[in-house]
Image 1: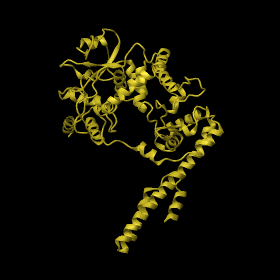
Image 2 (image 1 turned 45 degrees about the horizontal axis):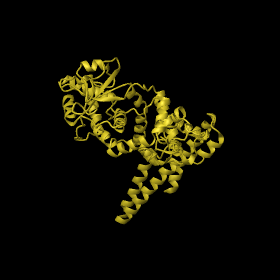
Image 3 (image 1 turned 60 degrees about the horizontal axis):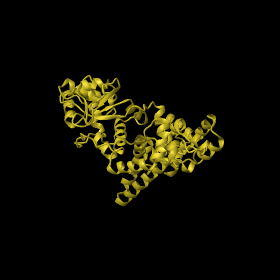
Image 4 (image 1 turned 135 degrees about the horizontal axis):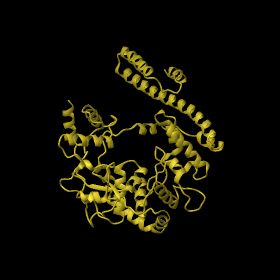
Length: 437
């Protein structure tokens, strides 16, 4: 059987063993074992069968990877990366099957704001952030003076990205990126990230052994992807290297440089928690609905503490990430700059609030409601299909609660005389399902 496997691997031409081949071998082995009429032989044959199948799959994947790396070496040289770096790194990269597993993995349940927020805004993280803000105040003050990025935000990003440098990830970045570059799902993107990683090594910023990070290639204190590193990393300590792993000065200056170039406004905060009147029209919520602060004040929106909103022309959007029973936030231009770092609204809200807590501001005035029944991705996919059937555009049927799906939920809520906060729960799921039947 191993001979058959080896023969098949030589003919796969960059494909993992075919489903038909595997099914054929399984059925053949089952027929053989059934004719033996002994339980022990059936068991041992099946164990041998699946061991062989795993071996065959690994053999095919490694052959495909080897062929791909050969092509990558040629392309890397054509892009001007030195032959020494190309050969040193790509002759030794390893295929990491676990990376492909992680890339394919989708959580069973949708992420709620309360679950996301409470996992990241912890008392320990706030205390550590306050301690490190004080400990590095000279460095952070210097960077703030040069770039206009307040120290509290840099420490907040640091805390959320790597728990203040406590965990960078332990994956070999060249191995991870080469594995992903040779996988068809996002090959073009990760091929360029691999070449960018080679350029970083080529420039002498880091040795291959120290280039570790997340399984997807994010690196250092602030988890920069290689392309972000090349565009924004700074040698702030003047040692001739942009070392985002070993130099906190380089890492903080690089993060500030990124935010500055993304358009950070030094005269603005990220946003603030606000109170809404009881008769508020929640259809006005959403990151695309920008209004001036004076307009929001006229609608009865007030801060949870302190003076009234300044009646200025500064624009802001209103977010209610946990629905009308949870906290509400007015977010400014700088909130959207934070989202250039990570496209998640939950992430940007966490960065802003953690920064405030590090500077001594209080916890949320309105705590998010406790998590109710968890909603699966399959339930969200069915919801999206149902909304489409009702003539409401929910975007793609992907099981992701993105802005378009929340907007569609809000439209359904408006049409059915509900509070149009765009928030999904099990009651609304059933209401949409019933309406679509």
